[in-house]
Image (cartoon, rainbow, N blue to C red; front, side, top):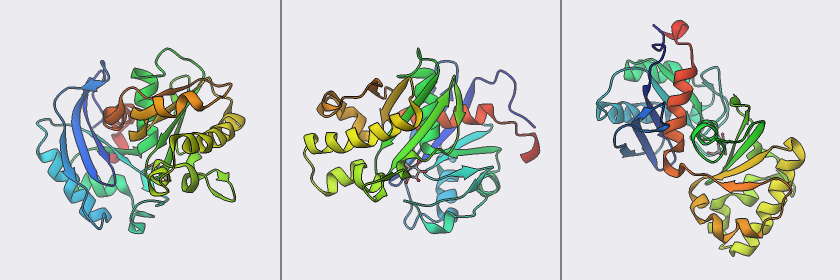
Length: 257
Ligand code: BGC
């Protein structure tokens, strides 16, 4: 069975460190088609515990059909390859197999920042821009999505670019700003250095800043000077759910049915 051609509503589920959020998504409008369901992420967030909670979230959503899911990790061909900020048991897990067995549905699994990037480029801050767009999410870690003329280049992981002799995310993530109690001025200086690196690598048409801290963008973006336009994300909390559903809509399910 494949996704119905022209299917315009698919469920998206965003799996984060604190919450697992899902909703039916209207793919034509790029919006939630019904209110979202949220359950707390289990601790420890092992694959089996997370899959069980995902099944509970789906049980509260009144819709059938395939599901798109995000994970904060490299997901290649349905298998989780990395676990920077998640339980290490995920490494090597065939997430498509796990979630389809636990939920009894066709599933597609995508990196969390990649999902947010798809949503922002098609329906949010990047919708009128063509060429290369980079979305950078600032949260517990740093995630990235690179989208070229609407097509995602998955798993770019620009949060792990080397900066100051370490991973960029260990220096410039939102969690570091909070932990080190950095002023917005100091945080902007760190972001400046990091975004210069992203610019040097890709020279994108646009950089979109996502993650929870994008809601406070007015506090640090005006201090950043870059030749590339840098704008805050627009879909905020819903980008992961919407992008997960978009990703599922783009997947050919025939071999996984
Ligand atoms: C992970 C990425 C993820 C990002 C945001 C990073 O630590 O390596 O896969 O997209 O955090 O959650």
